[in-house]
Amino acid sequence: MTNALSDVSFWFDALGDLPAPDDQALPQSVDVAIVGAGFTGLWTAYYLKRAQPGLRIAVLEAERVGHGASGRNGGWCMGMAWGVHGLLARAKSRARGVALARTLFDTVDEVGRVCQAENIDAHFAKGGSLGVATVPVHADSARAEVDALHAAGFDEGDYRWLPPDEARSRVGITPNHGATLFAHCAAVQPARLVLGLANAVRRQGTTIHEGVHATRITTGRVDTARGNLTATSIIRATEGYTDTLQGERRRILPLYSMVVATEPLPAALWEEIGLRERETFGDGRRVVIYGQRTLDDRMVFGGRAGYLFGSRLRGIIAASDPGVRHVERTLRTLFPMLRNVRITHGWGGLMGVPRHWRPCVQWDAATRTGWAGGYVGEGVAAANLAGRILADLVCERRTEFTALPWVNDVPRLWEPEPLRWVGAKAIQAFGDRADAVEFASGHPSRLWGSLFDRFVR
Ligand SMILES: Cc1cc2nc3c(=O)[nH]c(=O)nc-3n(C[C@H](O)[C@H](O)[C@H](O)COP(=O)(O)OP(=O)(O)OC[C@H]3O[C@@H](n4cnc5c(N)ncnc54)[C@H](O)[C@@H]3O)c2cc1C
View 1 (cartoon, rainbow, N blue to C red):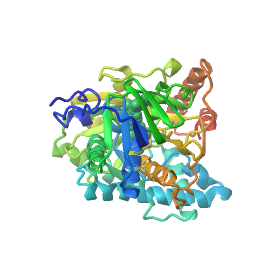
View 2 (cartoon, rainbow, N blue to C red; view 1 turned 135 degrees about the vertical axis):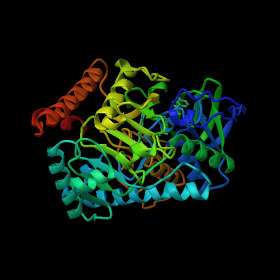
View 3 (cartoon, protein in one colour; view 1 turned 60 degrees about the horizontal axis):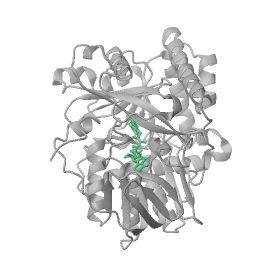
């Protein structure tokens, strides 16, 4: 027993020793091959077996289960995704946006239900999410957004504006000009969730082959560094690592996000910070931040986005990385009471960004190949829904899920380098600049904000 994943994230380090990987030989042929053992691949396997228990499924994972974003994220299991608010904003697409949003809301409960049913102790706590206005102008826009969401058919049980006093009693961020409480979000320990899900998948009879790097997917066949495999249906669930497959370059842009964890904090500090229901929290800035109170009373906090020329991938990101240190400074600024606490862990991971900045579930019935992903850092719950959609598509079932707008909403390819790098850097600079202007002046940053929005919304 070792824990070769302890450098990956606090979440894995907290688990102590883990069983060594199974070293089973690859089968020559299966009904369904799934490449990638993160949430997307595993949820797909899980629902496929529930639908058709007789299917022979193999999941191929280059490293270990959860080695990608699924074992490194901020642990927001959130009933929302990129692109939904865009659908809600336009009369023409509003009904589809409402259907997708409501399905995502229910997805959080679905994850909770499976945790119960499969005995997965993922520290699931559905305390909602607080979107704090840390500049006055964000309070105006957040209130207007809550009104618009209520006009679209949601209610106070979904989104509620908390005036400053109430917001401050929920979370001691400084400054705090009020907050939106979004009900459909749970805090989870993601490594526990992904490993528990993998065990549930194994119990169903699916084999997960770790340490198997797929090099190419073609119709009916996966080539790997350990031999080839034929399959009737093939699913790619490789998110930010998609570039590692031949022929898939420029499909998903890998973007880094960094996270820190504090030591467990004493009750007196939590009296000041709040988060009594383990609400997750963020604020209105464009370069997103996210935090949660863990079950063992640490603060886990992340943010920052970064892109490396040529979509270069970094496996393990050290606590000393400048991006991680930046996140630590942001945490201490927002919570001055944390200025002297020890940061015990710092890490980073890869989010997958498609060119149109919203998730996609693609299925080609002719070649029986498909993929899902492009969650832009919001995939913990969304991957469950994507897995249910993929399972229906593979089983050729037309359901409420296969009618959702993600299906075959295929993004175009990213630009070749150096344009891709210039674009990614420009977007980051616009976001940083817009945030800085708004924090300094308290007014909306029309120029930088609109440049940023133009590219990412
Ligand atoms: C730091 C960070 C914080 C985040 N915070 C949140 C959050 O709080 N809430 C939220 O909703 N989302 C968050 N996300 C995003 C979320 O974690 C992801 O959207 C989600 O985990 C994606 O799951 P996935 O299975 O599609 O991808 P991954 O978990 O990345 O899994 C892909 C897997 O495929 C494997 N793989 C790739 N290529 C190959 C190959 N060629 N052969 C074999 N295997 C391969 C990889 O090793 C990896 O294990 C965050 C992401 C990061 C990086």
